[in-house]
Each structure stands twice: as structure tokens, then as C-alpha cells.
Image (cartoon, rainbow over all chains, first blue to last red):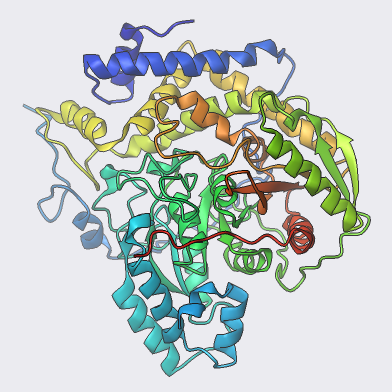
Length: 95
Length: 485
């Protein structure tokens, strides 16, 4: 299997990471060597194996629905790169 | 005064309780040494001024019933600390100030410890050499231009270099045990679910665990006892009866059955590592334990499995960094452009690489071939351990396939960097506890570690084995203070 530049462009779109030509070529090289190493898994027959989805074999606990953090809006907003005191501000999305 | 930083955590606690030392004495000593140690680049953020204030306050009304009375401690910068910048070693969180405290660090402060500062680490804990940090690489106290290992490299460097008595790291594929091994200290990766993940910047949620790093096994046991707790804020935290690990620590391991897995004898492993392992086998026998040859047949598939599961989870976890609510934001022509530029400029190369791998293996058409396949192999790896534990109480292996390497030596070859974690990764995949203890030196004088892997929730047992071995090994770390002028 080989990951070409077109695939890199497609994945970078899905991952929302802009990648220029030079980076895309470097990434294609890296990913190909990593996937070559990952392909080793194909040696194993796993048709009848149950996938392991969670290592902690517990069922989720229920809890009452209570508000625990109150009045922290200001603190939360303070971490925002751009705000107007009440809201997070992003580039315009609606014309 | 200068001797204070050489003392173990256990000694410091004792001396504070007996009023031979005050918290201020101890805190000052570690701050002084930390300030002289800038060249190690172990800290990202220091909190020395308020640490000293807290120490003075503690001394005015000392509560000596606590487990860590007035003990100063620096922690990995992956733990959220309320009102103190938490970066995860990334540009994208360069200005992030959490509004809450991680459960693990809260447990530590509740027992009387005082925050010294936040320690350097690989960006989002992705790395094995601390070279992927946005804040620069960390130097090892063992030798100049040597990596301390990663991702808890700042933590390892700070403990080995005596900038903090003990610390906590996180371990997703070996990030506590590998740097502990590289710097001649003890590091424990607890059972998955033992320590709360609440407030730890997430990397791969089904693998991440916090754990203690210390100069010796007893200190490690004491800190583990403080940080391990059931926490309703982490849905995978497990409610089980936790021991008083330090009190119940014993070097009596007579009759214990220790497994020696043949698959860990990997191709190209240096003879020094093989010799160390043989020595380790002799040590546990000298302690009255019995060694049994075992097989973990799927060991060689662990690393490829890990490099599907961990990046897949990382790509989902790191989707939250979009430049909107916190962290770095790049300018963009529109919303999508802003997202794409923020993530391109905010994440470093290794993090981008892993997000790309993760996105690919989860993408339409590839999910079954990669992600589902990896989950199935993960099951086989766990089954190997379950099978082995029918015959043995614990497993002894080397911690790493080599000693520490030079800065820059492996940065251009991701796969050779990943191979560092070949002995530690299976433990995370199976959710088991593992401890690395220093066990000898290679021909260059660099430390080498041995790993003891336990059954789930059996931390006490592997701590006991480590404690008994530590006594026999009598390891002395060669710290020359090369970085102090």
C-alpha cells in the first residue's frame, strides 16, 4: 500500500490541518514508512476475535444531574483568543 | 542546606515531621537547585514565589498528619493546575490557564504538598525523547546532550537531577517507565483506572494513566498511595480497595512466581540488555522467588497495534483544539481557513503526523482494515497476559531495548523512535501495572532499567518485588551536576 499526495491532501482536509506541498511530501514519506510497519498486523488471522473496545470492564455509573461549577463564565471566556465579554468570537460564517 | 535535595521523599517527610527541617527549608533548597539548573530545561513554568509563600504558611501552622507535609513538588505540564498555565508542551496551549485542578494533583495538594512548577514534556505526550516539546528539548542530568527519554522527560530529569523530591508523569505507551529507565530512577505506570484521568490533557484515553516517578521504590509507593483514588469525574475510574502501598511494602517475595517472556528477547537487542536481564533473574531468585519461562506470543504485534489505537484516539481527542474557546488562534480568511491554519501552526510535526495517521485509520473505507483489526489484536495481546497470569504472579523484562541516546539521533526516523517503547507498550494495551527500576549501567555509564509487570490492581505485588530487587541491586545513580556552573 502506498499513501500518495492526493490521499495526504484528503486526510489533511478531514483533520483540518492545512498542509503545503513540501510538508505533504514529507508526511507521505513518513506515513508510508509507518504504515509499512503497521502492515505486520495482516500476518494475524483475527476473524473470530472479539475486538477489545474498553480495558476497564465496568459499566458506567449513574449520577444525579447537578450543576457543580457555577458562575465560571468569566474565567472560561478569559481563555478565549477572541471574545466580546459574553461570547466567543469567530470569523463571520453567515453573509 | 545543599544536602536537602539529596534526601529521599521518605527522609524529607520524616525530617519535617520530626521538626528537623521546615517546609521552608526544603522548598528553598529545591528552588535554589532548580534555579541553578536552567540548562536542563526541565521546567516550562515555575511557581517558585508562591511555593515559598505556601511553605511559610505551612510552617506557621503545620499539619504533620498529612502524607506529604509541606513537601515541594513539580509536576508534568500535562496536569491541569487551577490558575496556573498548562501547556502540554504545545504552542496551541501556550496561553491556556485552567479553571480547574486535575484530580491527581488535587490529591497531592490535599496531602500537604506544594507546587513548585510545571515540567517539560513531549508535545501532548507524543514522543520518546522530549524533543517534540514546543518549549525545547530537555537535557538529561546523566550527560550533556543526552535525551532524558519521553514523554515525561522533564519529570525524569527533575527527579534524577534533584530539582524535585518526586514527581508525577503520565504513561500512554511507556512515557513514565522509559524516561525513568533512561535517567536511573523508579517509575510506576499503574493499572488503567487506578488514577483518575480528570484534568489530564488527553492523548489516548484508553491507554493514558498518571503515575509516580521517584528516586526509590518506597517513595514511589508513598506517592502512588496519594494519587490513586476512585473519581466519579472519570468514567473509567475503577472503584476498588486501594492499599496503603508504602506501609504494606515488604521485601519478602519468597515463593513468588516470576515469568520470563521469551518474546522480549528481540532481534538486535544489545548484549548489555540481555546481561542485565539475566542479572535481574538472578536477583529475584536470590530473593527466594521462582522464575518460570513463559510465552507472550503476540508481543511483536503490540507496537503496530499501538500505532493505530493511540493515533486514532489522539485524532479524536485533539479535534477540540480549533482556536475558538481557548489556546492559540491563527488568522484565517473564514472559519474553516482559521481552523486549518490554527492547527497547522499550533501543532508540531509529530502531533500532526499522529493526527494524520489517526484520521486515516478512522476514515471511511479504512476503519475495518486498521482500527477494528487493531482492537482485535489488542484483545489477543490481553489474552496472552491473562494466560500467563494463570502460571505466574508477575513478569520481569528489560524496560527499554537500549540505554539513552543523543539528542537529535533519532528525530528523522519516526519508526526507530517508536521502537523505544517496544517493551512498555504491551502493558498499556492490556491495561496492566508496570514499574521500571534502575538496575545497572551500560559501558558508557548510562543507566539501564528492568520492568516488572503485574496483574491488574496488583501494584502492591510489583512494588514489593521492585523493593526486594532494589535492595539486591544497590544501584547508585551517577549524577555529576555537569550542568551547574
